[in-house]
Length: 302
Image (tube, rainbow, N blue to C red; front, side, top):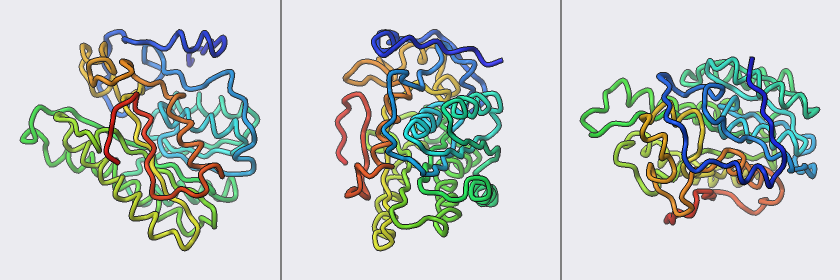
């Protein structure tokens, strides 16, 4: 059974944001949230929605955990019905689905490997069948594998990283686009590494740079259709991908030393999700081809 979350309120929540983490490691990616210690903070209990997404349907890839889970829950609080995909993390996915249902919104979870084009089309078709439309598309899945040298990046790793982090974004957009109407919003997840680089994440960082270019080019392509395309480029965030990719020692100092950011800590997913809400709502109706940077103060040249 998934452990219960006990959040008392915003003041307590903010005090409980950890600066360091217990040593831990998971052997498979993209990782399991229910095994993490402490579990990521995905919801601000003192946040009440204002119907910014009332009547909308959002399709979110990787919505079972991490940033994707937090986006899904925040969007549900704002009135959206949610469809989300996940790879094979059934326990995390069921928790997220039930949490959203508890908020009074409709929610479907879709299991599948989005590296393969047909699974993206199946996810879109199922969303349309169950929820009737797609107004917001969030591309959010990723893997990362640390290597000390580019010479250590195998063909298998390179293909897996690009298939997951880039190809799936193209496939999902291709599948969803014919069903998106005027004022729809596409939001892609990039990373601070796309601007700063990371010496042990060369292939991952290059995929995140590709996502920025995809976002800017697609925004130009779809401007005449009044479909906005933007991206979010988070800094280090406490998600299952972290214990699934970093060593136990690096997990302990994640955000303070690995990597180090001006605010001297990693973000929690609930601190990243509002950037996606802004870009999905009418608050950003005059923004397209842009990238938001919730990164703890890291200066980037965007």
